[in-house]
Amino acid sequence: MLSRTRLAATTTSAIRSRPAAAAANRNNNAVGFFSSSLGSRRPLSSAAVPTWATLDPSSLGCTSEPYAVSNLVDGAWVSDSITSQNKIIIPNPMDKDAPPICTVPDTQVEELGPFIESMRKVPKSGVHNPLKNVERYLQFGEISRKAGEALADPTIASFFATSIQKTVPKSHAQALGEVKVTASFLQNFGSDNVRFLARSFGIPGDHAGQFSHGHRWPYGAVAIIAPFNFPLEIPVLQLMGSLFMGNKPVLKPAEKCSLVMEQFLHLLHDCGMEKGDVDLLNCRGPVAERLILDGDVRLTQFTGSSSVAERLLEVTKGKVKIEDAGFDWKILGPDVADVDYVAWQCDQDAYACTGQKCSAQSILFAHRNWEEETVGLFDKLKVNASRRSLDDITVGPVMTVTTERILDHTAQLLAIPGAKLLFGGKELRDHNIPEVYGAVEPTAVYVPLREMLKEEHFDVCTTEIFGPFQVVTTFDDTEMCHVIEACERMSHHLTAAVVSNDVEFQSTILAHTVNGTTYAGRRARTTGAPQNHWFGPAGDARGAGIGTPEAIKMVWSCHREIIMDSVVPKDWTQPKAT
Image (cartoon, rainbow, N blue to C red; front, side, top):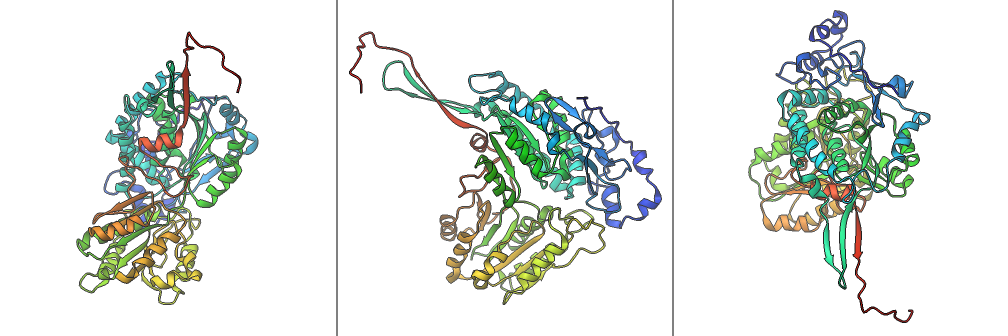
């Protein structure tokens, strides 16, 4: 295999030399985005590109020759012309008339040989474990420290924030927030904190010379299938967790944003990680499935849709840890206060990142006190949503649901007796987003609680639309049991929020629900997956957490007990057989 040739960074002058005719096809929103991809900030110049990087993010979607993402296998970077004759062209998500963002290898099943061989070489005991290659715990502590320090550098943070924005358009604050969380996670596991993850314990035995040791043991060859919506944060946190515990991972990122993790791997190599520690495979889902089966992958961590999760669980006979769909609820209690704050947080939870968070607020249960005329919560929600714009990417392309699908779903809900459109329900104006993506205004549909609970309506009311969309309903004191019933009947239990400082109300809701990451109190939210607490579903034995020591140990290691029994008593005599 040929090692990858570093691409020369595209100069700012070359970016500006695009033909005027092509520029004339852009609408004003797209022009604003691509000429100033960080909101009020200037686009990155070539001088700001890190030395280890192989692309200039300011050139993405602006040059006639799109950037070519590469695969990484068994320690070698290989271009798409080497690993695959096919390529996936990633369209510009903000402007269908602009050049593509990049191309990604469309690796085929018959081209998986090097990846299968790489996985099969990994022993079941892992690359390191508490009794083997223990120096690697310290090595990865240092790699994590250096990578965290790098992401804290404003130039490198902007490099990744721009790369994220170009592939999965979101506001600068959201993109930079993703980088900051990732940096904090890496800093958390610097120095000795990696080997602390593998802390063992001991128990005295039954007699002299016997002692039982419990260890955290790696799986060996593992796979990570990462989603598009957090191109850096989710894959990095899971990738590093797998490495910390002694596994050799193959990473299959979402095609739309693969270049972000490609660049992060270049950063890890610059921080001292061996190129053979991680494989990067760009391909479509069925090809990844074939690698998992033929490469003897012992554990797959999957973040994404429920249908794919169920498929993987079936074909791997359950060897998957999943963080799949989240139809996430928020309940506003009877104690009304801090209305402007609550309205702002509801808007952020439902519509930040264009609603494309697995933790996004999918349904809002508001006590009737919040809809009183003097409170006006729903009016405030409408005003906040109306401020979102393509200009600053506070609303943008919906990457996995088309406009037609979202509007059809809206119509289905509005056909329920008593339902009404609170706001939105329309295609975005003056956009040039490709038809394969969605482009809709932030939308909220009110459905009466008792109608929602009817068998013929419940499924459509609790169908997740991965975009700027939420269902809203109200309840009074006598209907709390119906709210709890709705939460019980939902099929996925990722995040939730109980917005109330009423201790009795809080306790009642928390005692009768199961969501894995639940906020409670006046400032409760559904979104926010920082590095300082567990994030993951509950109520599902297959569920995967992320970010904390507990999550890393639970997902990326298993328990191994080694019982030492060394001393035979001097006065031992052979007993009668049993």
